[in-house]
Length: 296
Image 1 (cartoon, rainbow, N blue to C red):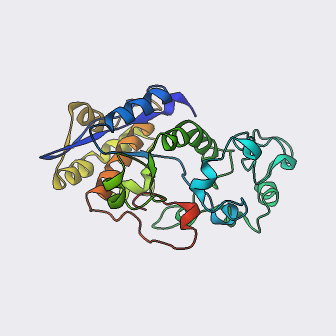
Image 2 (cartoon, rainbow, N blue to C red; image 1 turned 90 degrees about the vertical axis):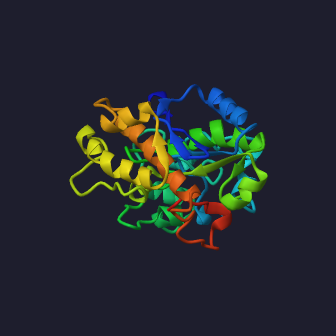
């Protein structure tokens, strides 16, 4: 949503392993997509995004569609033309307009969201992969758009500006369209959901109690663990990536975003290299609706 917080790290595989470059600011979204499809002409491309891709099963079954990808194709059109408009008041909430609230005004509460969507409980608005596990807290519900840890506005922008245009051009969605092995055989461009906080553990660099990714000094402390993990798995960092890691990604507020971009990328490499399973479990329930976080 905020252009200053859009960062991307990239890696390319060669005969010697992975070459990992440091995070750079994204161009405008259409240009980013165009570059991705250009790369897919000569390489298989996996794009990971730090926003939800999928909906809670309890919500999905109320939409009238068979699955998330069928629903996705309709969003913003016809009876679903208000889907990307965040509801202003509790009375505006509906299955076809599920995101709430636009601003912190009277009547704004999670209870209003639960009731407006006809759910029994707030927990019904969490996907299985968003439940607390492995010392990770529960995520914020997809449709809630208020507060520092909300993900709703990012999902709205990501679906509207990235996922929908890419799928319409032939990109595939993991895991809805298949496993990574299956998609690598039939798709040049695959989109997946990632979660940097889960990637910290994949590369042996979790934050201990009292540490924070928001502090440069704490990010710098993870450099040795990250580089050791990279050495074991045949990853080489470019000079840009090396300098950013050694510096803890600087003292600017964007440091945590750049750090997350790189760690999210390393998590993707851990999965594609077979060091981490694609999914810790493969639940049949909700699989058509909820998707999953790569490597969670």
